Amino acid sequence: MNDTILRKLERNFEGYVGTIMLFAYTFLIGYTILSRSAPWDPPQYTLSVTLYLFTWMTWLAAGWAIRHDSHFRFTLLREGLSNRANYVLRYVDLVAWIFFASIVAWYLFEPLQRRFESGREILGTPLPLWTAYLAVTVGMIIIIIRSLQKAVLIHRQYKKGEDITPTSKVDI
Image 1 (cartoon, rainbow, N blue to C red):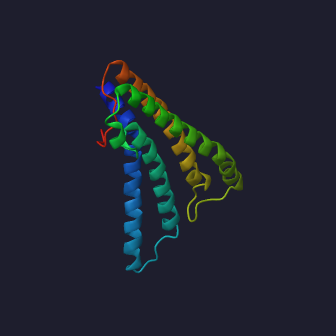
Image 2 (cartoon, rainbow, N blue to C red):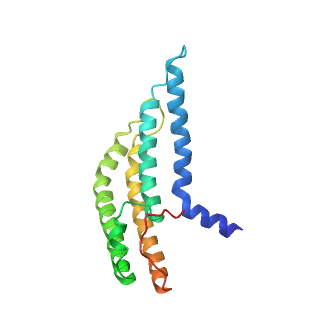
Image 3 (tube, one colour):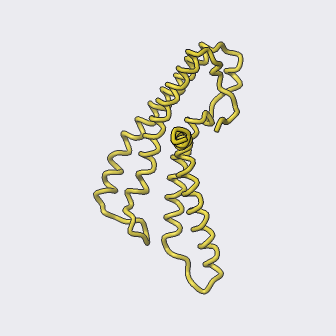
């Protein structure tokens, strides 16, 4: 049973965290809307916190999409190709993701370090501003991890003789 729970957590980790963030996001937006017609002013932090929550959700979703083969790709062109050709193309896709994410993560290090050293906080909160900017770096690391993981899974499927042709179906 524990094995099943851990597998489910691994497969959907980004989705679970993103769902919690989405509830927080929805609550903050709803509270802000309600505050406009109430006798109190909306908190000053809601705009910046919702923006940063959305940023975190977006980058977490990118890693989740790679894990579940639900990212943008050209599936129609690949349906007529052999399994071997699809195997090669799937690896080209994953190498491209790893290359892109590595470059972005590398160039984000310096701006993230500047935010860390500034000591600034997210408007109206005690949260350090660098935690908001960390979303992109964490997202890139998750993309790299999920791409490597997907490479292993595709290799296993290919070795078993399973069809690895990408489809437009999302497997959750």
